Amino acid sequence: MEEKDGMRQQEDVWILAVETSCDETAAAVVKNGRQVLSNVIYSQIDLHTLYGGVVPEIASRKHIEKINPVIEKALADAGVGLEQITAVAVTCGPGLVGALLVGVSAAKAIAFAAGKPLVGVHHIEGHICANYIENKELEPPFLCLVVSGGHSHLVMVRDYGTYEILGRTRDDAAGEAFDKVARAIGLGYPGGPKIDKVSCEGNPDAIAFPRAKVADNSYDFSFSGLKSAVLNYLNACRMKGTPVERADVAASFQKAVVDVLVEHSKRALEDLGVKKFAVAGGVASNSHLRAALQAMCDETGVLFYHPSPVFCTDNAAMIGSAGYYEYCRGVRHGWDLNAVPGLKLGERI
Amino acid sequence: MKILALESSGLVAGAALLEDHVLVAEYTTDYKKTHSQTLLPMLAELCRMVELDLKTVDVIGVAAGPGSFTGLRIGSATAKGLGLALGVPLAAVPTMDAMAYNLYGCQRLICPMMDARRAQVYTGLYFFEKGDGQDTLRREMPQRALSVADLTEEINRRGKEVIFLGDGADVYRKELEARLRVPYSFAPAFCSRQRAASVAALAAEYAAQGKLVGAAAFVPEYLRLSQAERERMQADETQREQMRVGIKPENLS
Image (cartoon, rainbow over all chains, first blue to last red; front, side):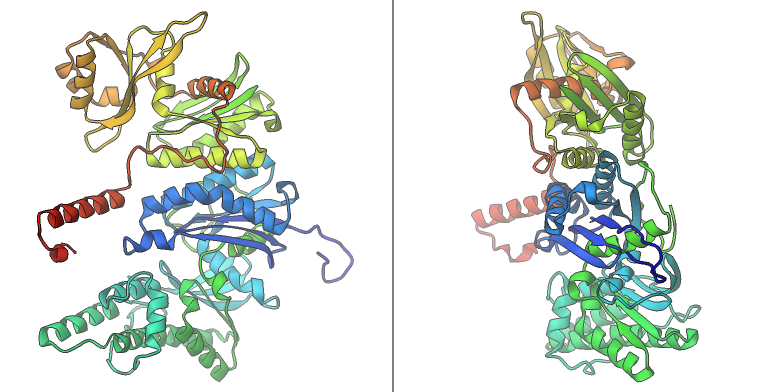
C-alpha cells in the first residue's frame, strides 16, 4: 500500500477473519481493510427455523462442524495460504458465548500454529466497518445507525477504532421486535425479511402504533412498548372477532420502527452537524428502512452509506475490515483471549 | 511420531507432548478458570519450554467427549484449528477411555465418572487385558450417561472389585457407598482426573492402527442432545402417541 506522499512503501496487510457470534459460521480474507478477497458464510438459519429462533447449543455444535471447511474455503477462494496471511482476526464479543468460543478457540489455535498475530474484534464494530468495504471513500468521522437482531445503536464514529455511543435500545433490539411481531402474526422466523416483504402489500397508516420516546436520553430507543401495542391490537381483534389484516399490521408496525430510527438519526446528524451517515447490521437490509433513511439524507444534504445485504448480515469480511484497523492501531491479543458475550462497543480487552 | 494431546472435557485443562516412548512434556491444571484462558497459554508455554517446532507434530490427540459442552467446544475447536494450520489429522479419544487409561495395568474393574448434572454421570466400565509385554484397555461397558443407581446396578451385577476415578466419584461418593455390593476403592489425586498424557497414549495407539480423523470432519461426542432438541423430540413422541390412540393433535401446539 502506498502512502499519500508516495515516499514510503508499506506492506500489504492480509487479514484472515473468523466470525461465529450467532448462527452464521463465517470466514473471509480481506486485504488492507477494504478489499474482500473471499467471504464465506454458512448460514444455520434453516436449522433454527424449526425452533422459532436461534438455539445457542445447536448453533455452537453446528459451528464446530462447519468451522474448518468454512475457513479452508475462505483461504482457497482468496487463493492464499496461511503463510501469506498477516494476522488472524476473530469476533470475541458480543454474542452467544458458546458460539463465540468456537471461533475464538479455532482462530487462536490457527494464529498460534501459523505464528501469526491475533486480533480480537467487536462484532458491532465489524458491522460498522462493513461500510468501508464498498465505499472506498468513506472515512471517519461519520454517524452510524447499527440495527440488528441483537443490537440497536446510534454511534458516532470519531476515528478508526474510536466509537461514541449516542443512543441504544432500552429493551428489545429492532430486529428482535421484528421477530416477535412476525411470530405473533404467524409469519414465522426470521421476522425481518418476512415483515419487509408482506408490508409491501399493506397500508402503513392503517393502525396507529405508538412511537416510543425515552425521557432522559432522547437518542435512546425502546421497542418493547411497540411490540406490546401490536400484541394488544391482535388480542383486541380476537376478542371482537374482527379479522386481522396481516399486511396492514406488518406495514404499520414497520412504519413505527422506521419512523423512530429515522427521526433519531436525523436529530443526531443535526445536533452534531455531521454530513456523513451510514447504516449497518441485519436490519439495514430492510428495504423500507433504507428508502426512508435515503430520503432523509437527500432532504438534509447528508451523504448516505449502506452495505450490500451480504455485508449487512453477519459475515467475516466486516470482521476483516475492523480487524485491519485494529491491527494498524497496534492491537494484539494474547493466547488467553476469551469470548466476552456482553462486550461493550468501544470497550477494549 | 510426535503426538500433541489436549484435554479440556471437564475441570482439568491439560496439554501433553508424547514422542515415541517419551512423554516429553505434560502440563495440567485443575483450577476454576475458563479453558479458553488456560488451554492455549498452557500449550504455548509447553512448546516454549521443550523448544517444540509445531511443524514436526504428526497427530493432534483430543479428548473427544463426553464432558462439559463448553469444555469440549474449546478443546475441539483448538484441536481443529491446530489440525487445519499444521495440516495434520486428529486422534479422537473418548474421554472415559482416556480416563480409564490413567489406571494402566490395574486388574480391577475401572469406572471413570464425570458429573453430568441432571442426576447423571458420564461413565463407562473398563478392564485391562494382560498381553505379551503390554496390557490392552478393554471396554466392559462403553461410555454413556447413566444415573448412579443404574451404574451401581451394572457394577453389582458383574460382582467384581471396582476402582473409581473422576469428579463424579467425589460428587456421588455417599450414594456409591450406599448402593455398592462389591469391594471398591477410589483412585488417589495424582491419577484421579483427566490427563492429557493418557489421551496422548491412546492417540498413539490410534495412530498406529490408522484410526485417525481429518481435522475438518472431527466433531466431539456429546452423548446428549441439546435441551431444545430433547424437548422437540419429546413433543413429537407425545404427538405420535396421541395420534396412535386416536387423539387429534391440534391441541398440542
